[in-house]
Image (cartoon, rainbow, N blue to C red; front, top):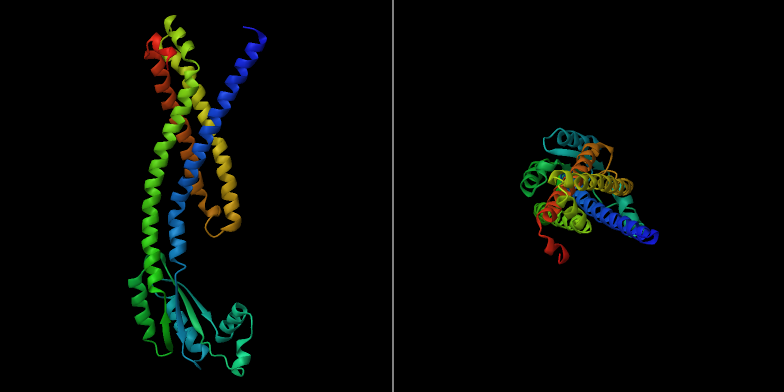
Length: 294
């Protein structure tokens, strides 16, 4: 073989290796990304449900001491996560900013907005039945004028959370299957270029395990490198998410990230090992004439 042909062969092998590595990295990245979504599903569900709000409007001219007494009672109640007091003045100021003008001037300085308590329930109580029960209990207090919450909105949130969880589970299962198939095909194409060498080694008496091992080992290393590259990409995504969604994605979720990263490494090594094992076996057991038509 001339030097030019040798260089061409090496370049082709290098290109094939990089293409295979890139394909495996991308598939592992996608798997890892959706793995993070699944692992974060509980945190996201909790965040969404605990942001469901119930507004307790207080009667006019009620003393703040009475309002804080009610707030203290609610704070101590099972199922209630937080209770925030919003004075009539604070509510008016917020509404001014929202509409962009001082509406109190049009009402001769009279503030029509009532003081209120903003109530958030714990995740397990963020459903229509619990909200109705709390609403009845709170409404019984004489200082309370009205309790408001969006029943349809709460119902919709709970339905959507259940549907999204089921969809993600099915989607991840399909994605895992597709990833295994695509990675297997990528490795099979790589092994295909060595089919004659595999056949030659078999003809000169090499055992199947002796022939198989270098290919399996090389693929496992490739799978490990691909998993590290995909973890690097996932880490960049996590850092970006921390900037925008710090309350959902933060250092307290380190265990989740470590589990997903470990899963990506195991998947990278395991899938490449199994795929290479069967791909090499195929060419170990195939007849000579079929090597030219595969």
